[in-house]
Every structure is written in C-alpha cells, then in structure tokens.
Length: 208
Image 1 (cartoon, rainbow, N blue to C red):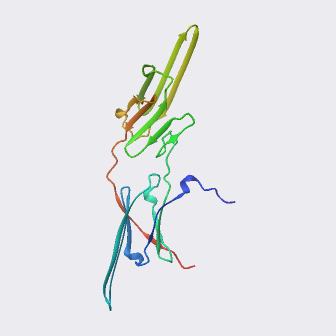
Image 2 (cartoon, rainbow, N blue to C red; image 1 turned 90 degrees about the vertical axis):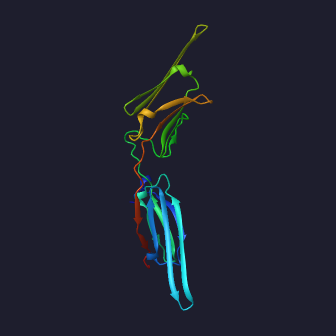
Image 3 (cartoon, rainbow, N blue to C red; image 1 turned 180 degrees about the vertical axis):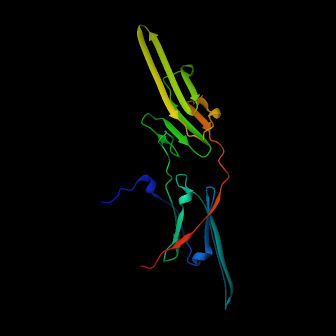
C-alpha cells in the first residue's frame, strides 16, 4: 500500500544550475539566514594558457521552506538541483501558518518575519461597540450591537478568540478600523536571533 504524501513531505524546488564546467568539489553552497549562496570556481593551466571560470548566485529561501532541510545534487549531465522540505508549522495551539489564511467569513490572519496581523469584518458594528483584549498570549475580539427602532429589536454579537504565536510581543498589539469598515489587529514579533551560516554538502548522482 502506497503511503499518502503529507504536506510536510513535499519538496520545494529552489534552483537548477548548469555546472557542467565545474567539478563537484569546485561548487559550494551555504545558507546565511534566509539567503542561499551558491559559488563555483574552476582554475586550469593547460597548453593554451590559464583558464578561470567562476560564478556566484544568491537565492532567497522560500518562506515555507525549512532552511535546515536544504539539499543539493549534481546530475550525470552536470546540472545542480537545490531543494528543501516544506516547513512543518505546529498548529496544536492554534498557531498560524507562515503566510496566513483566509476563512469562509473573509477573515484573514497572516504572520511573517516581522509581525502578526488579523483582519476581521466588523461592518455591522460601530467602533465603540468593539472590544479588543489581550490576556497573556490570547487575543479576544468581541462586539455587541443592540437597537430598538419602532418596536423592532435587533441584537448582534461577535466573538473571536486567537492564541497568538509565542514569539509575538503582546505589548505591541494595536488595532484600527480600515476605510472598508474592517478591524485590523497587528502585533510585532520579537527579534529573531542573528542568522547562522551553514554549509550544504553536494551529492552526485550515481551511474545507473
């Protein structure tokens, strides 16, 4: 029985490079934070003189890729393929996936390297009817509207609860109403540690 591939098993293609003019030991890869650096240098001294070839390429590591999983392989025809495994994001505590999502109610939550944000549709409520509260790492947005017009009573309530990612600075949470009548709640993420440099080994395809 074939195992169904999970999202965390998916490979993300980063780049394919022509390195036919270089030996595998002349090609190097390293990761600096979220940047992948590929270098190649070839020197030879033949009967017709000195030959020198070199290049350097830089690529941003895709946001949903795990930098620690980057692998590279040189094919028999001399092409270098660089891939990474899709990042596994823990959602057990309602953490938001990198990038974000939009649900059926039109609510949008996003998280990137600098901040967390959530956009809520509150067009049926006045600003004074909305409350935004933070307790620990929990964000609560509630709204209540009641009106009695010509004997017709209307009541609407709105409650949303979010467990924010652990690296969000809860003291930075701010909210504002957009021109479209939506509520935008934003919070800064804590500073990430300095990027680490890591060298990546290069595999070579074996002859069939």
